[in-house]
Length: 233
Image 1 (cartoon, helix red, strand yellow):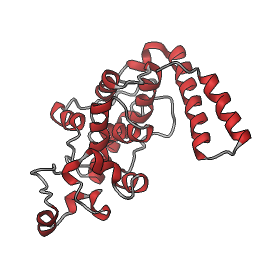
Image 2 (spheres, rainbow, N blue to C red):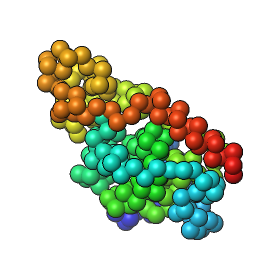
Image 3 (cartoon, rainbow, N blue to C red):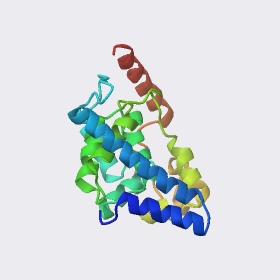
Image 4 (cartoon, one colour):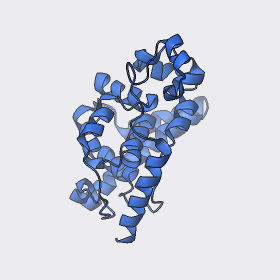
């Protein structure tokens, strides 16, 4: 890890594009390199402000420190397959995709309303590609306390799960307890009827947890809290 310079990667990507073709993968690879540099400049400019609960914006949001729910998030036991699969992958391998990191961070802050610093510290303790600027900068950004003017944003967990894992292969790999479910049901197991739970041997609340929150209601409640705090800035 850390053996390749960003300049080398950039030059190799551009050479690949010239010799072959450009595609979404090459675009996003360069895009992520730019994000990396951006957060390094942010660190240099703002220093320790990056680590404060109020973030770069100085927004005093009354974040919760709900350790019981944090533990469910940490262990991948929230009842939402996309979140749980990503958190279990992180615990097992020390890695999680960028898409996964955005989703689990959004869920922790925008659905559970839990202090984003707790999530950033957990990532710091496990990520094999941990970078102080990228980690804390991204958590600032996702929590809505970074230097971004778009305010309260959140990821639609159900849509993300279906869009990026349509067949459910990823969640089934990391959540063997729901691997028997068909693709049409694996992203929303809490909707299984009693007969379906018996058929697929997936018992909600027994061998796979009930959802820890209502996705829509929790987002609305935390948006109200966020906007109230922002108005007092």
